[in-house]
Amino acid sequence: MCGIAGYIGSSDAVSMIISLLLELQHRGQEASGLAIALNRGSISVIHSKGLISDVFNGKLNDEPSRDNNVFGGIGHVRYSTSGGYMNSEVQPIVLGDNNFKIAIAFNGTIANYDSLAKEFDIKRVSCDTIVLAELIYRLAREAGNDVVEALKILPNYVVGGYSIAILTSEPRVAIARDPYGFRPLAISYIGEEFLFSSETAALETLGFSSWKEVLPGEIISFNGSSLESTKTSVSVPISPCVFEYVYFSRPDSVFNGVSVYIARVKMGEELASKAPANCDIVIPVPDSGRAAAIGFSRASGKPIDEGIYANKYVGRGFIAPPMIRDTISKLKYGFVKSIISGRKIALVDDSIVRGTTLKSIIKRLKHAGAKEVHVRVASPPFKYPCFMGVDVTSREELLAWRMASIDDIARSLEADSIGYNTVEGLRKAVGIPSICSACFTGLYPFQGIDIEDLENMFIRW
Ligand code: SF4
Image (tube, rainbow, N blue to C red; front, side):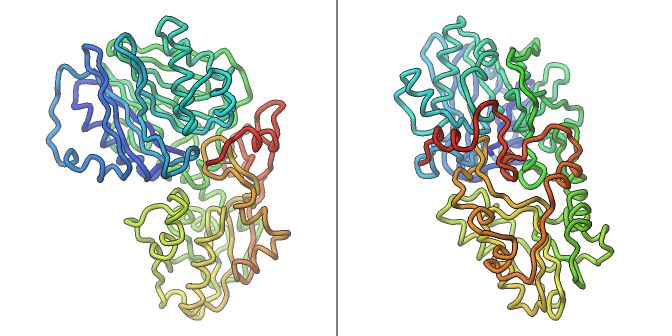
């Protein structure tokens, strides 16, 4: 999971892209960058490890100033799912020569990047993005420097998920979602202004309320005056990532026409019917458990209150680099003793992946005087890895995989009970007939490729 964004239009492209990326910071906290194309054909890039506020510190308070030589640009916030945090290739990645240059910003994971590197004799294999960038560049060169033609045939080569933006030195920008539609991507096109963003919320926040989601398999290109839409010829059943609704996306975003917030509330309602709790009060794990807790409270008739304070300045624990996750889970939460003390609590969280954060929260709730803590989870047990854009690529790191039963999970977390939503309840809450839920079911949407194949092809750092 990363965030991508871009802008071509009459306003200051750098300011617009930085603003869009700020709205996408929840999708990636490790590195930030942008690439700008000039009308005369060159591409320049600024990128570094750190948040938007670190990397573009000097730019955040600048007055926007339009430079007529600028065509527009693309940007990226990174959450590494391949290549590791320390070795991560910060994006956008720029490739090419004086004749033809491209910059790539990518959200997803390419599971077979190592075999692609061997097949195409690509020497730099530090992560999937660099292999993907090389592959697209070569396909585009073979097609007469045409990135749209490269994107049309890309699904024939890659196994994984991608939403991608490519800026070329022509200049032109091309964006695409893979034919499964795993990751979100939306555009706004009004007059001569073209913007895109991983999430609709970023467009809305900047005042662009007239947007459209890029369809699975759709490729959109814009050269500054005309916008063209085409599709890859590869046809597969669509499988948008259900975890975007559970955790990743902002609640004020829409994904596949479904409000993320409403889907989360419905998950909570489903959860209350499938796993009721003998409790006095419902308390959400902030922030991503909040909407599900509201649904759980509504459906169960139990009052809801905020007993846990989340320090937003610490960042999102799940997408933080592994070496600082424990520190984040310790520093992030504060507890309101007057709400917690003496109560039987239904603690509602969106999901349990590794369990590190939740165990520490339960311990501290009890320390704050909670009589009982009954964990209720808005999604099913997360048992299988993801190779389509989430940094969970081995079963061993997953709590639900390691434990033999639900009771064992409760014991390991030191909770008084635990109850999960079901896959059916999750699908009902989202309301889309065809959706990826492989991390809960182990059933991946790639034809003829199962979990062992994916584990064997994906090279971990
Ligand atoms: S396996 Fe899970 S996290 Fe990965 S794309 Fe599918 S639903 Fe999303």
